[in-house]
Length: 172
Image 1 (tube, rainbow, N blue to C red):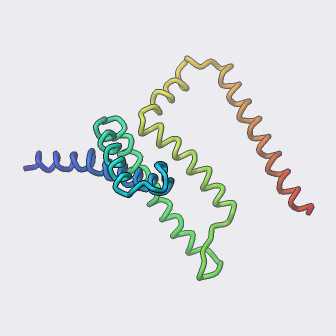
Image 2: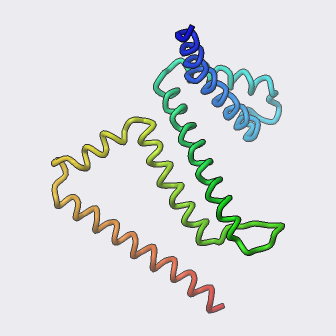
Image 3: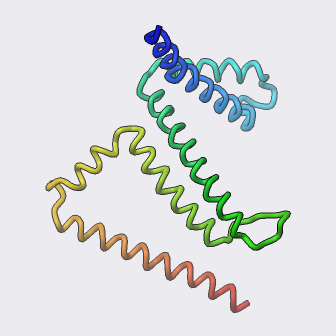
């Protein structure tokens, strides 16, 4: 009895859910961009989405990546919800409208960008090989100094460019 439940759960999470997710996303994109012209029908988009989704679930690797990315997305949404819920308690703005300050939006954008890169590396399995190649003796000390130098240059350029724009806006 328990084996049947595990098989049904595995079937549902490994095939049905990724199929439905891919089908809905592909269908919505096809409906939005009208890649086949304005005369294309909803049935055409549905058939194309169906076929592409079936091809997707025929291969376990992309299906596994999608499953892992969805897990990451749900966890990230819950964390974001908890943060926004707690932040709203301390917010002293209008009761009708709640908006995050610009600085927090920028910080969130940076955190989300880094988190998505880490999640893709984790979901694809490339994270372990990348980490082992960076921490192994294959990369010499000279390589690390070059990486640090490039990061410092990018940070200085970003600081100069962003402060230059804000100073230019104040002069007007």
